[in-house]
Length: 508
Ligand code: ADP
Image (cartoon, rainbow, N blue to C red; front, top):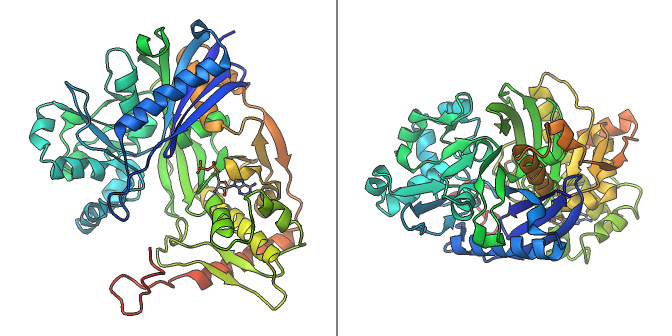
């Protein structure tokens, strides 16, 4: 029996999952690690924590699985995206904590780039909307504040996202590499040429010498260092988490789309071998790069996905567990005209209104907690439907045959049925909901030659439940119209900073 192992290095935990080549999970282990918040809006990880928890999770999962280490054919890495590390080439020591994707400290860099009129260039070359999330400004910040440009120029430092950092530390010979999906989140990588871009590098004064070599998503980059598991095992794939999940859902054809319902929701649509520019502020990114051939994707996210359910539980106390939201929502036939817009931190694509705020409309004396809970679950689906519509519009109005779903909140059957109803498209939930890890394992299998093609790997991806749309067209139209009216009510509520009308509490 041949075994594949996925390392899933996430924002709050490091996990390892041991898979059979037909996609069964033999064992899984996760270890949480500390988040550091040095200032409001700043987020860091200790690089040592990332490394030690990841190695320990790997060792424990392999031990729990009972497999002989010799059976492990390949290891795949998938990771939290955009988080930025910088280390010394000779000692391997990081010069600073990892700056986590959520960290807002480089917002002034982005404002400066926008003021310099760089938005169009960034958008056209990288597919990204300029934002502090992406690694480029975080790297520039480290070089600036630590005065490291001369050392960087002389080739003494290595920059990397978490995939690079793990490859450097876990793979024999310390390769300095990143895969194309991770490179595409730096704001320094040209999607069209598939290379680091000189104009983007000079925009942030980044010396080329610090950058990793960009490799395919599935290829052997070297062997796992022998002391970790006692044997040298090929590390054969690296992919950002959302890209691995798209692969783990077997969304291989243009137009195939997945949505992950976690704290936020991440929707990615495979758009094939040509990058598609969005008219609705979606991001153009990589799906993956195999045998040197790039496959592109459109990406959109919902800020408040499962987090809306957490809010119902923790702030309002309307439910005692996330799972209870489903029973409660089904206790009423509908929301009785109530709409909840969870714009707690503004609205993303396709609205891009940072001044929107959470709003509940349509309440009457008869409105009860079940209506509010139901409206909250429906809101997660409406927001996802807005992204879906934007993607469909960007691809010439071709409607996908289905939406593939995963993530913690996709366990909610009521929500998945409502999603199918409101999209008028079947929603398919797979047997293995750990699609990110599965994707990394399948990519590793592909990179190591366990599968001859991605189609062969896809045999490991099995549908569990399909939710078929069952809502009448007129009801769907009325529901969507109600939602969009509610969104209008939520817009432009918060006042820009410095305004006398600003409520300090309302603006995070
Ligand atoms: P992340 O990877 O972002 O931490 P997960 O995929 O683990 O997220 O999903 C956790 C989220 O899913 C939480 O926000 C939680 O509120 C939500 N969630 C979990 N179970 C349910 C459920 N049955 N119904 C609705 N939401 C749920």
